[in-house]
Amino acid sequence: MPSSADSLGELATQWTRVFEAQESRGDRAEAARHDLLVRYHHAVHRYFQEQLRDPHAAGKLFSNFALRVLEVHAFLRRADPERGRFRDYLRTILRRMVVDHYREQQREQKKQQPLMAGSDNEPAESAATPEEDQRFIALWRQELIDQAWKALEAAEQATGQPFASFLRYQSDHPGCRSADIAAHFTAVGKKYTAAGARQIVHRARERFGELLVAEVARSLRSGDEKVPADHIERELIELNLLFSYCKTALEKYA
Image (tube, rainbow, N blue to C red; front, side, top):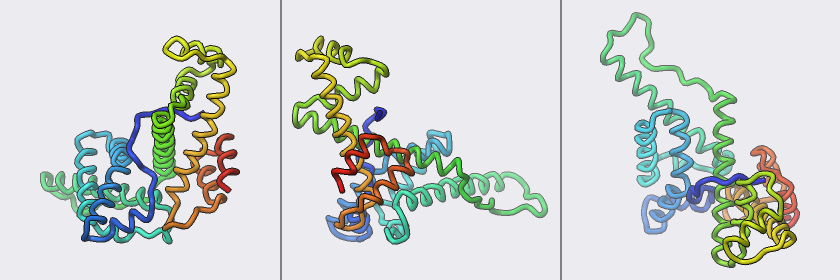
C-alpha cells in the first residue's frame, strides 16, 4: 500500500532536461536548470539533513548545490546516461559535497590547533558504506512515491474522481473496512456505499500503480525513446516498489 508524505516538487529525472541544462546560454537552458533545481530541491536538502544532522550546514550545502545548477557547474556537463542511472550519479555528487564539507571543517580546526607530527592535511575519502547506499535508495524511493501521490491528487482535482482522497484515507487508517471509508466520506459530502468505496479504492490503487511506473520510467529515460518494461521492472525491484498494482501497470505499459 503506498504511503503518503508531503508534496515534494517534481523529482524524477528526464535526461532531456539534463542535457538542456548543460547548455550555458539561452532561455531554454535557463528554464531547464530551474526545472532541475525544482525537481531535486527537497530530495537534495533532505539528503544533506540526514547526512549532516545540522540544519544550518545542510542549508549551506543546499545553497551551494543550487548555485552549481544555476551556474552550469561541471557536474552538469559531465552528466551522461551512458555512465549509469542519474540517481547514482546524483548520489555521488551529493556525497562528495558532504565529504568536502567535513574536509573544510577539519582545515578550519587545524588553523586553530598546532599540527601533530605525521598528521595528514586532508582526511581520506572512504567509500560509501552499504548503509549509506540504502539510505539514499530509501530517500529516492520515497521521492518517487511522493510524486505519484502528487500526480494522483492533481488527477482528482482535474476529474473530480476522489481516488487520492479515498486511497490516502485508507493509507492513514490501516485496517479500515470499505464500510468505514464509505461512512467517512458520506459524512463529509456525497453518499457512498461500501461497494462503491471498495471500487473507488481498487481503481485508485491501479491508477497509483500506473503513475508510479510512469515516474520510474521518467527517471530512467534518456532522450525520447520509450524505456523498456524490463528496465522499469528491475528498478522497481531494486527500490522495493514492485507492488501488485505496479505489476498490473507494467503489463499495461508493455
